[in-house]
Image 1: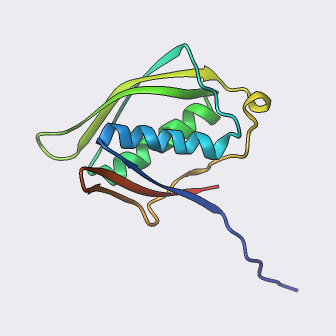
Image 2 (image 1 turned 90 degrees about the vertical axis):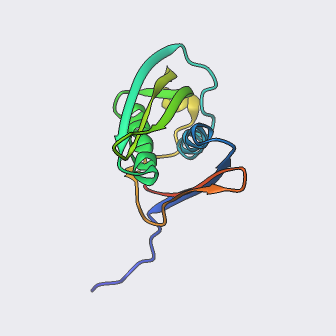
Length: 140
């Protein structure tokens, strides 16, 4: 016997920010809110990050997937960022900067569940008025 079940396997967020760097940081904050009931507020460990992509949508996917890797595999929760995003002369975009974070504490931060990856489904990164907006769906 086969019975089809309705199953929601995705979560998502929409964000706005005045700058592109602030938008990517808001995406980091949204990710932490989805993963933890009480995300950490401070962290002393620092890690360098460098990413490149052909467009801003792909760069946002790479950014979120990098953060997911740091949290779930490297057990490093990025609580603050100092990033810079720039357009490459030959096309595409680069993101580089520092992540400051804390060690993963599943019980202390009240882990809400694993994120498999960022998806391209419904993905938007676009200028909006005086700032930027993004929409992203995550596979859980």
